[in-house]
Image (cartoon, rainbow, N blue to C red; front, side, top):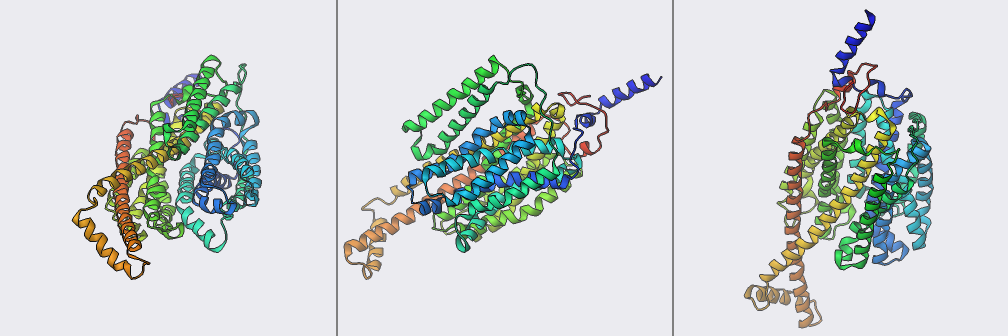
Length: 559
């Protein structure tokens, strides 16, 4: 009789997809989850902040070391390519040595390198240390995400996502003001020393708050080390090609062509190696799900949407000669509200709000803010962006919270906790997607701005042909006004022509940034359509909080 009752109970449980997770949880959950959460969010924020500060401080770094522009162009590339290389390889390292051990070891090396970088005055040594810095910090994102999924209790997941979003977005949007403060009151060296100070705090949190995860159970198959190497090299070389493409003039450069072709070749080699000898540490079929693919595209689109505050707004003010200190206040109006908006979003998620709806609301707000910013003129300053940046803060916070929450729920309800291989594969895949998608977006936007500026300069120049009465009148009036402060009429005429050229260039850039804001808005509209195509599944944290114990999900979220 008891056996029959147990069987009936099991069948009833199997009909409820919300029971899919309980038995898949590891037995060694963190006894200090709040400390573990702090370690997770610090790891994600540190990587983002380092890359952003390196971009902002590149000019000062080149001046401090006395290196050329061509050499300086490879400084950021060295760090970011190393981040990309280590992403797929993290699956192998985490499985071989254990994720917690790799995270603590990498953080220790990263701290030492970050403290040493400002003391280096040799270009080659600087590049080597930046590569080491990228290789070590590149483990933070996939491994901390793995820890979050396997060790943080479900009741803390929503607040973890909120703090994670605050950390990442804050690192992006606070960085200009932070670097401007360093530049005025300290020195550019603090863009490295900041990480050297914060990373040990992360290490302590990880050590105390997160227990060691069990290593993945290997099958009898041998680990395909070569497949990892091919994949990592391929992604890294393609990333380097995209990062340098605009500067090298794309296919007109032999170096760009070589990097891209070799990168694609190594990726193909990795695929051949994968199909000829499957790797027991990678669960590729787990990624072949409709929702996972759409969420990967959405993550790339979100990284592109972030360029509104990370690239377009700063550049629209930089063409007027504003420094990071001066244009940082515009982006700060996005950063500060995000500290509170993510908590509000977490509250709604805890109340059972569908994360897809939150994500859609965020992308809609970003699109609307970009449309409002498309009213930009050549006379705009940082203050003109303040109202729209508040709306952008709502959009970025809700979009990122909804996106990350949906990613976590997709991993959990699709059976991601069945084996460590699945979570490691999922984390590494979205680490690669985050970096690769972000670089594709940056390269695309950089090329778009450059080409549109050329087009608008040409079209405006057609209206200022030599001999046209408007052009001649403008140059003549400016020449008369400058003649008293010039050494001759010829010099005054040259200065007048330069002023006219500068005005035309500012107008061309204003039209270009209008196009850029429209571009981002349309990308958000496309993502709204993709969000509507996500398959129906449990997509709110309320389903997690009601989980009973003793049920094990399969790949479809069933018992």
